[in-house]
Length: 51
Picture (tube, rainbow, N blue to C red):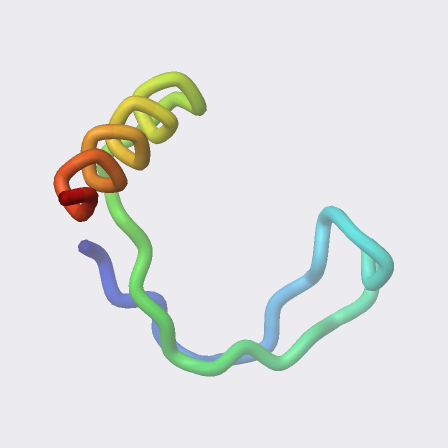
């Protein structure tokens, strides 16, 4: 995980695209995950919770 420091950033997607937005501190994973990998993870974790 990588810590993203708070600050003002220029938005490049979404309804605020092009405007400057204030961002609070957050963490983001530094390893890419595809939609298929994520779906496999969710299905595996869901199956573990079933009895």
